[in-house]
Structure formats: structure tokens, C-alpha cells
Image (cartoon, rainbow, N blue to C red; front, side):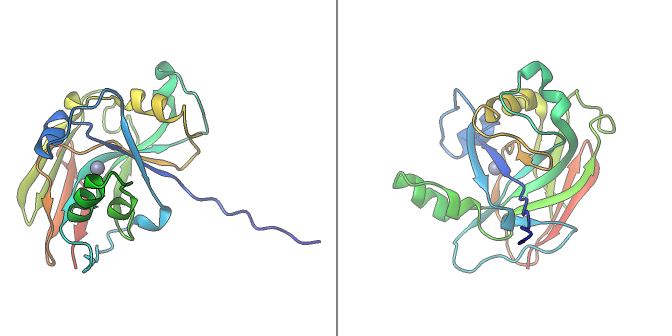
Length: 212
Ligand code: ZN
């Protein structure tokens, strides 16, 4: 008898244009429902490992985002129950090959090559929702080489965490361990080799990443 190996992979679900000011800085319309895209698991970098800037992708932008880790399986989740699916809250960077993304968007093509390349999803530390006082307004801030580049708070979200979970679970069954990147505030820009990125959630350092 052959014993099969069960491979499980997390989904990395990302929300685009979820802060109006960021949508405007890229000349995008403010969306009427969440803009959803995904990254493969091979995009993940954890444990403070460096981000190796690819040579062939043009400008790569930092997008600091609050990331939700899903704690139980569910589909068609009602908004009023959505909070109970959030197991951990942390920070991540949705690295985006902006030159390539603009080209793909211009040609009406999907964004995956610009969003899902190796190393494009950086994760920092996790906290329980209670430890970061959520539900409640969370602030996020990105420093590049000690200088603040991105700053925002969840009061500016177009779609709340609960609305996002409810919306995406109508299309994708959420499974334990899945990750949701909830969108980036204004201030995105290109990274360069040697940059040191540090992310703060409610002024607490939660993510570090060196660009190599
Ligand atoms: Zn993003």
C-alpha cells in the first residue's frame, strides 16, 4: 500500500488599494469592493532573513501592511463572526515590482509576476489580537534607514478586517494558517541594496528586513 504524503500550503491573500490615499498616489480609482490578488507560498520570507532585490524586475517598491493570520477554517463567513477567525496580527511587506506591474496593468494582464515573485512577502513577528488591542485602531509605520516613509492607521481602511474576511471567504475557503495582507498606506517607493527596513505596529518594532 502506498502511503500518500499530504502537502499543505498556506494561501497568501492580498488586498490592493485599501487606503484611499495610496490608491490616489498610484492614480487608481478608489474601489467599490476589495481588490484581491494572491501570492504563492514561495514568496514568503520569515525570521528576519534579507530580501534579495532581483535584477530583472525594474523598480521594486515597499508596501508595509498589517497581516492577519487565520486561526480556523471557514467559508462564507458573516462579517459579525469574522473577528473570531483572526488568530494573530502582524506586519508584512508586500514587495511589488512596480515597473513590471504598470506594464502588466497597461496591457490588461494579471499582476502575479509583479506581486508573487520569490521573496515578495516578508513577515515580521506576530501578536495576539488582544495584545495589540484589536478590535481598535492600529497604527503602522515603515522606516527606511531610520527615516519614516509610510504611516497610517486602520481608521483609514476602505474595507475593515471583518469586511475583507467576509468578502474573500465567499470565493476562497479560508484555512488555518492562511495569511491576509490588508493593504498599504501612502508613501510607497523603491528600495535599494543596503536599505534597512523597520516596521512598527502601534509604535512597537515588529518587522526588520535588510535589502541585499
Ligand atoms: Zn500591497
